[in-house]
Length: 257
Ligand code: PAF
Image (tube, rainbow, N blue to C red; front, side):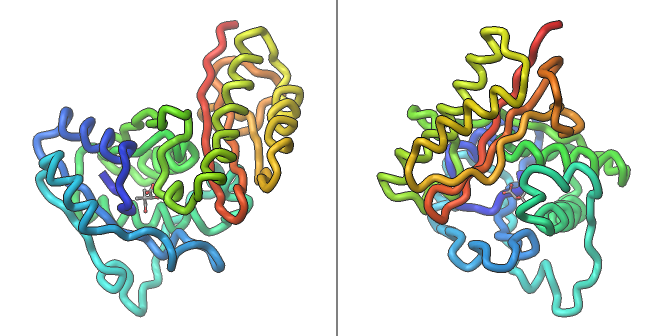
C-alpha cells in the first residue's frame, strides 16, 4: 500500500483491503518530491509521522517502509518512468511532470517491496489508470487493486490535502461532491450530452465565491478520452481550487444502452 502519509480513513480502507487479501502487508510512507511541480506544496505537505504510526499500529500491518528522500533519490539519480497517453489529460494538463514522478516512485517501490498486489484509491482515478497501463506495458507481475473513495458524512472525499482547509473552505469544497451528485442525477434522468452536464456543473461551482475550476471532464472510464455522448462506463472527473488549495474528485457512472 504505497502512500505519502498524512493517513486518513481512505488510506486505512486500502490497508484493510490489503490485509484481508494478503498474507503480508507492507505500507510505505514517502512524500515523493518527484511528483510535485515547481511552486507546488512539497514543502508544506503534511508529515504527521508519529500519528501515522499510531494509526497503523491499530491496523497491525506487517511492515512500514519510510525511506528518506536521499535513499530514494541519490544526487545523481537519472532514470525516470513516463507514461505517454493517459497521463497527458485531466490533471496532467496543469501538472505536466506529476505522473512521471508517480510512475517512477511506484516502480521503485514495486522493485523494493516486490508485492503481488498493490492498492490504490479511486480518488486518484487517473493515477490508477496510469499505473495499470504501466504495469501492463512494462510487464510487472503485480495485480493493481482499486479501492472506492471514502467520503466524510458531508460527502467531501478524504484527502490528505483537506488538512489545508479552514472551516469556510471546507464548506466550499463540498461543491465537488454536490456538482458530481448533480451530474449523476442528470444521467439518471436520461441526460447523455457531456457538454450540457458539464455546463450545469460549471454553473453550480461558479456560484461559490473563491472557488475556481481547473477542469471538468467526462471521459471514457478506460481510455480517459473525453466522450461526446454518455454511454457505457464513464468517469466524471474534476479539479477545483478552493482559494489556493487544489482538490480533485470523481464519480464513475455505468449506463445501460
Ligand atoms: O497516491 C499517492 O499517495 C501517491 O501518488 C503515491 C501512489 C503513493 C506515489 O507517491
